Length: 220
Image (cartoon, rainbow, N blue to C red; front, side):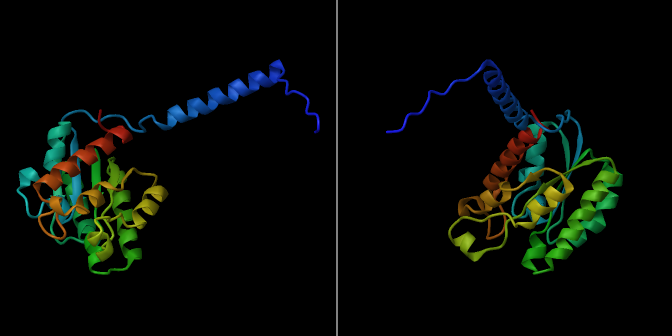
């Protein structure tokens, strides 16, 4: 049996170890801090999207932008139009920004692009252009991901966001609400048809978006 001398910590080593632990704890705490300041009640917000934002299958009062407005006190303009692709919304965006002058813009596009099998490069380019336009008007963009169309995902109630949203959000350094839409659309009981949330689905979607906004810092 070999002899191993006892391990001794001198005062310098101990101080260094304690300092390292303190720094790591501080970094962990900072990682949980909201990155943005909360928006006050009455703030102008735009929800740019397609039928999932417009509220196809439910009344305007039941769509998630209206429900989010009730939760936050913001004035949320529903800029969703059924059937819109990212190209369609890009054309509409400048006039919406001029008219409503939002401080925050949700960009919830790409679903119809995927359903129509449009080139992903085109969708990504359009999302980047929308983000740039929003910033040019002095507003903050938030990307809201749409699930990747998937028969298996629908059958097994396990849809997931298309991967390109994460790439766009990382490159543009903007918040991404990745799973809210996919989680709702994975549950048949929360849908009015194969593609759209029902009233309960929009209620849950608004709650999920609200909770994500808390983590980002836009709400308290």
